[in-house]
Length: 128
Image 1 (tube, helix red, strand yellow):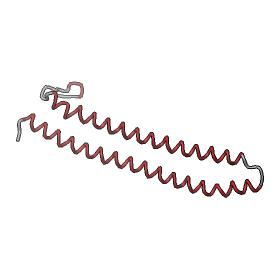
Image 2 (cartoon, helix red, strand yellow):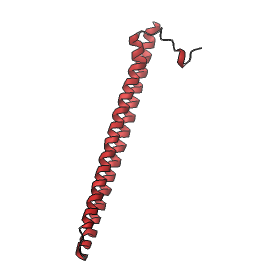
Image 3 (cartoon, helix red, strand yellow):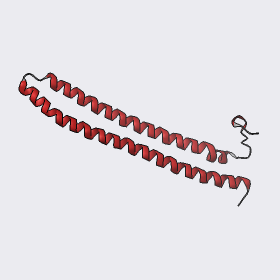
Image 4 (cartoon, rainbow, N blue to C red):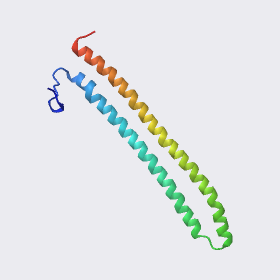
């Protein structure tokens, strides 16, 4: 009985073992790292933009000295809210696009790995 701890690699030469197991694992790990990096950068960019906007708004509010300044600040809040809503929409679209790309690349990689595994297994067993 074969289990994960007693996996017999004798039927596979080094190239076959690499193409069946190690190569696909490295490729998927690379894809996952790239996806994680892109997501982290997207989140950092969004956080910075939201923080910068919030701090700018606080500085503007602190500079209000009279009723006219407060009125001007409040009117500007509508534009800030609209800009933030647009930014959030764009950020959400970016995250969805990254997720879809990751899923599509993962599926393509899986299909290619299955084809490669079938070809290697056929070659290893001498079947045509």
